[in-house]
Every structure is written in structure tokens, then in C-alpha cells.
Image 1 (cartoon, helix red, strand yellow):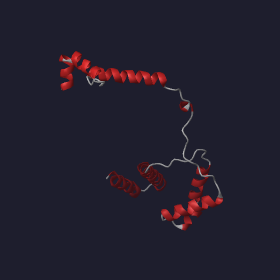
Image 2 (spheres, rainbow, N blue to C red; image 1 turned 180 degrees about the horizontal axis):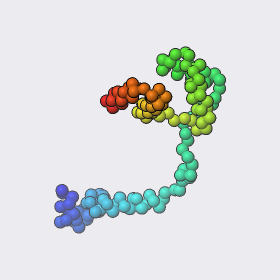
Image 3 (cartoon, rainbow, N blue to C red; image 1 turned 90 degrees about the vertical axis):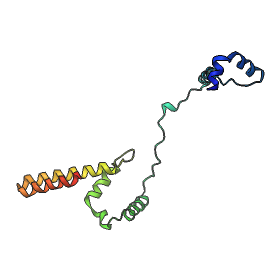
Image 4 (tube, rainbow, N blue to C red; image 1 turned 180 degrees about the vertical axis):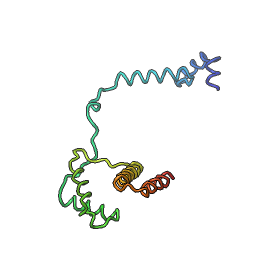
Length: 151
């Protein structure tokens, strides 16, 4: 490029012209030196900060109230098309009891992880059922389910 040519053959003359015309030299070596000098200046003037010692604020936690919980539960029920009887389901109540003990909120699994966990639970139940019933039909059902879930 022209800058490399100027640096190799005409650097002294180019720098003299830059000084005379109050122009920053664009030769690669001069540009690198300017960047290093600017970095050195910024490191010398950099103020120390305490932010490394503090945790970033987490998501805003809505304080509990019966009214807020009821509104959130009904909103969830409507948005996810759940039947109203869901609130009477003992597993739903167990899930809420467990979640209520979380001090820093809860983390729900991803859809992929949820799907994998459901399939694993189903297979466990089928193995327990097979052992309990000791029926060859259950074994063929498990094999068929494995073939279906593999696709």
C-alpha cells in the first residue's frame, strides 16, 4: 500500500511534511506508537473502582402479597390454558412449596432439558412397571417407545 511504500522509502520526508502541516502521520509504525502512548496514558489516569467487589444487582424481586400471588397464578393459568383444577393438584402445591423456599428466586429448566427429563422419568416408570408386572408386553412397549423417541 501507499503507506508502506512511504514508510519504506520516504518516511523522513513524509514526517517532515506532517510536522510542517500539523498532520498526524499515518505510517503504520507511527500509528502503533500513538495507540501505545494513548493506552499508557489511559492506564496511568485510570481510577480504581470498587465495582469488582460488589455483585451486580439481580432481577427485581416482587414482594410477596396474597393479592399479587393470586393475580400471578390466575394470569399464568389463563396464558398457559391450564384447567382451573390445576390449583387443586397436589403436585402443583408441592412445586409451589418448594419454590417458596428459594431465597434467590428459581431457575426453570430449558425445554430440551425438560423433554429429556420427562422421557427419562417415563422410562423409569415403565421399568418399574415391568418389574412389578413381569409381563413381556411391557418390554415390547418400552422398546417401541425408545424407537419413537429416537426419531
